[in-house]
Image (cartoon, rainbow, N blue to C red; front, side):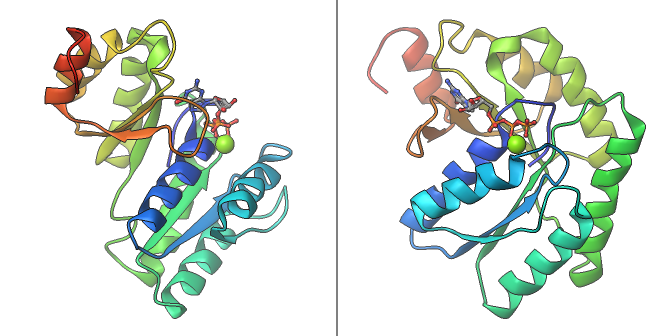
Length: 200
Ligand SMILES: Nc1nc2c(ncn2[C@@H]2O[C@H](COP(=O)(O)OP(=O)(O)OP(=O)(O)O)[C@@H](O)[C@H]2O)c(=O)[nH]1
Ligand SMILES: [Mg+2]
């Protein structure tokens, strides 16, 4: 999970892990935001509340080392998914972008195809600003998809059309609130129906 500060990465990581678990999959979370104070605690709190497995170190630890350990733990326990939460970063800050590349390299040491998905978490209430950010992340990391969050507010959904048209990346999930169950698989049919006020 990657994206700019506050876009919803940590919340989405927890929501997604919970959804997968509800679907009968086994999931490990990796707390790789070792940059922002309290970020590790935030994901740990989700993990405790939702009874999710988590691999975490402390603030200031090497995020790539956490990713490495988490991969090893998930693999040795035979887990289906490893979800890596990362620190919020501006696409213009090259040292932080380099840190993401390092996390990726370290995962690839274990599995050359990892991370199989690179999802950008985008705040859907920010409009065209998020499209520019997404383009840079896409150039750097080859995104495989998007999660668009905060679509429960008043700005509901209009931005999605622009994001979809310009980036041509699949939108996998929508964030529709702050609770675990507020993550909805994206479907164009349901989206169009919602815009017209029809039943999804
Ligand atoms: N209303 C609403 N709030 C959301 C949604 N997703 C996340 N939030 C809230 O947005 C705030 C930031 O969410 P985080 O998950 O911490 O965002 P982040 O990208 O991990 O932030 P950093 O790690 O600081 O970059 C929190 O208060 C979340 O509860 C959503 O879909 N709807
Ligand atoms: Mg976070």
